[in-house]
Length: 270
Ligand code: LER
Ligand code: MN
Image (cartoon, rainbow, N blue to C red):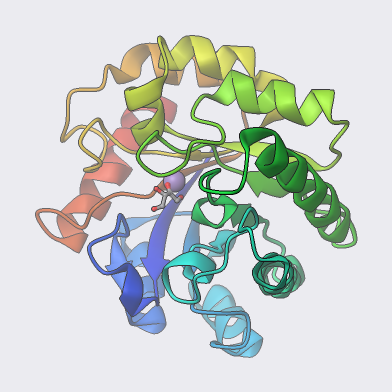
């Protein structure tokens, strides 16, 4: 397993669960100082940051890129893949193509989280799921051009009504024959939605591609009340070798959230 910490360059996401903010170079330097293996970044769009800048920082600090989020597509550009307007869905797909390419060149997967949207108004659940399947199929294919999977993240009920639980999302990917899409399991969402976080991780083991490592209150693991022992045990038992990435609030501040995350990572996985 490998450790990662989040950096957001999206002002519209302010208040969100990211450890470092606004300054990519400072975020990389801090991640290296704390001993992380990688960073996970949230960028306003694929052309907002030069690829070479990220490449140079990765080399300078010997850090990998764990993943690149597409959340700005929703919070900044209001693009959703299940929007009733076909032009919005199309722009959403193109926005994510850009991120897949950006991340792919740097050896990382792109994530679909809040851009999945929700079914509501004139859009039935059935219709939204058909669109979601179509988009995930195309996005998985596009990512395969880089030899990297695409990541789909079930979210809690307050953020989407498409998929809230990991096993439901895994079954959907399987039933629809969607290739090269892995699941991102976020412990914060799972704490709200799963009967058993460890049980759900076990159930989706073959499809598990990435983990957002957060406590019950979305603070760094150890700052809330999630029982981590069975979760860590199951990740080891299933032979998970991917990223354990801290998508948490920068509380009490970024440095303490990063430090606590590394302490939890070393405690459970080293
Ligand atoms: C994204 O990874 C996520 O978990 C959502 O809650 C958006 O912040
Ligand atoms: Mn997440």
